[in-house]
Image (cartoon, rainbow, N blue to C red):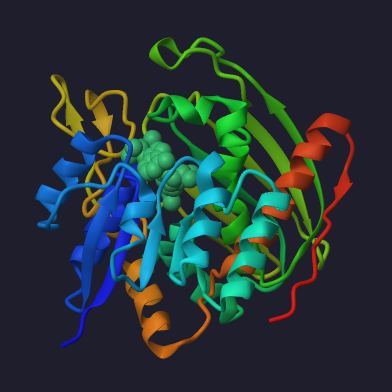
Length: 353
Ligand SMILES: NC(=O)c1ccc[n+]([C@@H]2O[C@H](COP(=O)([O-])OP(=O)(O)OC[C@H]3O[C@@H](n4cnc5c(N)ncnc54)[C@H](O)[C@@H]3O)[C@@H](O)[C@H]2O)c1
């Protein structure tokens, strides 16, 4: 069997999820990793039995024979690296957000069109089993016409310094966490957001070893959809209870709530605490809700399996570059609203296939 060859750029938090997901697929082989942290990359390579040594310059990784490259690096590098990978005739898997700004995102789409290569936009929530189930039920008409709802993601704050810096991340909790909720809500409702409102705040400026938080660590917003539905989103980097993601939708004939991080099948009370419950949990003492098979619950292996299937069939994924750009356009309109303190229209660009 000829294996599909993947290169990975980055060796941090999300690169590990990519490695795990690809390691589950018999017809996929990771041919190399590039990272500016070679020790971290070496550890990942050993864990997932990837041969060779890490490349500190990603351009050296691109000299290898590979079909697709996963881009798992900070947001400020997405445009530059994606454009280069596409120019080297490789398809890309790119983590959310597509880029820091719509302008950068458009440059990535243009580069893919020029190269005739695909963009697999990594929005894992759309492949998470609880949200897939919710989508099936919504599409069956179980809750009627959706008129209101709520998306919420929170945790205590990201694990690397670059997330807190405007220049490197492009924004804070909204572009980091809100982008997941917005993507899921657009997918659930199957229509566009026409207008948005948003307010952002910095609650915890001093981030210790990560320095000053220059971006919003809390954001609330309203998405106004084509059918008149108004859905709020609430995003926070100052919630100490571990990663929590919830989506609630209210329709004319019912309601649906999906909360894969807290409605888990295991509840634990422990006086002394234990090793690990879920991403970014501050403590495991008292009542906790450990998430079994975390990568699977949050959709990473399903996402990669689906992308590889699309690659083999030559079909466009549900979350392609244009989907990533659309969500970024909504995020950008929300930042505009946070500045203007007014409801803002979302501007979409037209790209032909
Ligand atoms: N889907 C999700 O839920 C999810 C979760 C976390 C992060 N992400 C996204 O993944 C991306 C990476 O985030 P992370 O949490 O893994 O960050 P991280 O800080 O954990 O890791 C960043 C990695 O990038 C590497 N890197 C930096 N510059 C590089 C360069 N020039 N060449 C090669 N490697 C370089 C670093 O060595 C490090 O391994 C971001 O865009 C982030 O938004 C997505």
